[in-house]
Image (tube, rainbow, N blue to C red; front, top):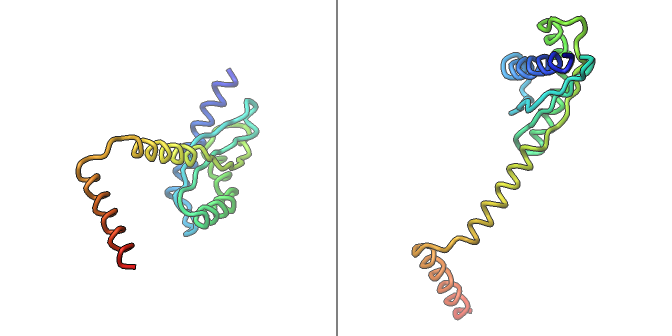
Length: 140
């Protein structure tokens, strides 16, 4: 029974934090942050909030710092809306699973592009490139 309650609280926290980030944080440093999952302990004292931040490493860093600065604001908003005796202490963790999936997808796409047979247009384009290289070599 406590696990079901923890799952419900985790679902609520995920939805509420997503809304707070989208609509209530007015920090210009906050970029594209996605709450990927929330894990709440069965005693409802701690909540690990996994987030993914898209953008360059500088943008991710700025967004992460803005999120950490807003933790108190987010914690209070959760406490106001959550109908429990205590509010789980929120801790943010960086979720690298999306970046890993993108990286794997890119590798698969590259492998498929290398293994598929070339079309007639691609073959002609490659031949033209080779001919241009030969002409440049002869000119030197």
